[in-house]
Image (cartoon, rainbow, N blue to C red; front, side, top):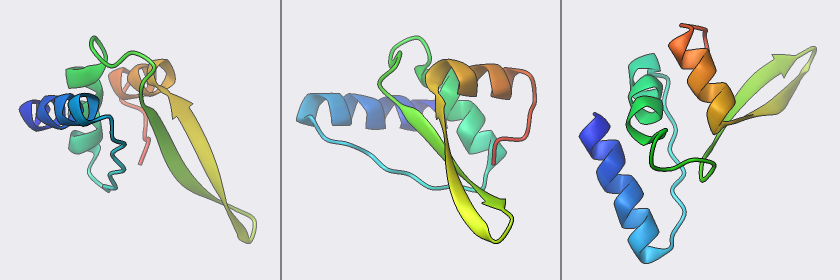
Length: 77
């Protein structure tokens, strides 16, 4: 999975395009962070949709926050 994320990142950089991906897989998110944290820096964000009362709220994590969360084993899905 890390090779896939690195390939997608390179394709996006080369073509100057944005990638939006969705997943429920913790392993996928963890692979994303571990494979790109040294090369992507602040070029990515992670948006989690949380239910708050009767509405849905988008919570955005920067690369550092997401890396800390996945390294700590916290639930980010």
